[in-house]
Image 1: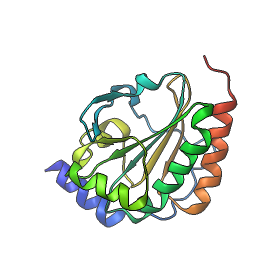
Image 2: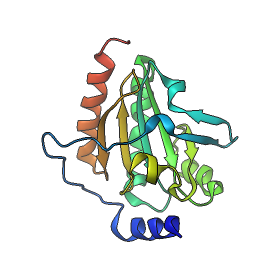
Image 3: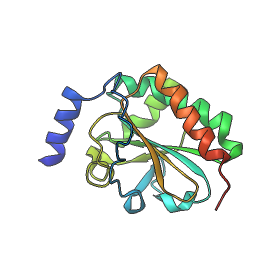
Length: 173
């Protein structure tokens, strides 16, 4: 029931095109990225963030019914192509109830990013504190959450790119 309520709230109040930028000094969410255990789509292989230690990770939580997600995914796909060789891994998490809707959606957008499935945000809600679609987490090479964004608009890309470049320039630990 809680997941159903979460989905209803997201569909009514989320999918924001522009979320206000966080105020200076705003704390990052108390997201438990290390506890996240998801399956890949397709294939169902196990995935955990620690598998990407040593890489900068942009983790994007989205859904096929979210219009801003439709805008952000191709741009994140471009970031992966541009910065992947420098140590960036863009990973996406679909919270769609049915993972079967994901591959055709991504094919339509011409996006070939790794996709994890979290039906009805079963993990994203309690572990990542997801409240808005999309929600984007930027993690440094040591696996620490450094930046967080709710919603998406074109101007978010500039800020996210600057954050990624900052983290990519930091030495690997």
